[in-house]
Length: 151
Length: 151
Image (cartoon, rainbow over all chains, first blue to last red; front, side, top):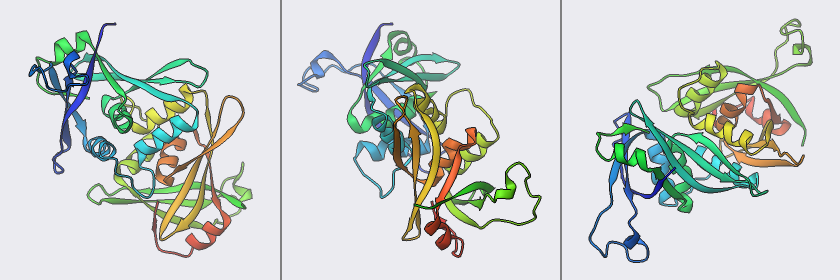
């Protein structure tokens, strides 16, 4: 599977809407170490997500911690407590207006395990540690031309 | 730590409220294999939880699955994918009107790992597999006399 490195470029939260929007943007080679220098901008696409996941993404992106672990903090603590690391997030498919993703976990014995996830949960989990986000090339081709789809 | 076996006895969901209530009830010895025969009822206490966690508890209790994994389904799949099992849930403390709990995970090498969790997340995770819920005796003593606290 050919895949493309992406980054979270926008979070739009409207608390009174049931659904929120995040946007992923292609990371261009020139972005590495010299962000925006070329003036070129990568392909991007929006994903429609739920409010709790959008709030978790925003909070964990900003590094805000709450007295007790929220659900995605618990998920991060479970991964760490079981001796694994989040290696990457991969958006693998787009079908019937819905994105599918995997959480790519490296076990302490070196084995790589892929767990099916909604992109929103995977990004909420990975964003706190700047985990690499990939999108399958065929998904990017389809999504970059479309209206927002659910993720 | 002396601890007491509990069970989820009620879920009260009011969609237009920010906070929901679940109730835990002491499992009495006579409950095992002969539920309710004695007519005695154990001590119980309510916990105030958030709407997403209440909905996750209700859905996973009823065994309703959705096309894609929701956050607590993902958490269950991560535990399983990393070769661990949820052995129990323990409500360990009550401080400043807030319950604290641990998720007690058995790793594939036999090691028992305790991960800090809100009771609501732990119960949403464990309820699908009828994982044992324990409450520390001193927490039960305090909580069974009080108004609902946050968990």
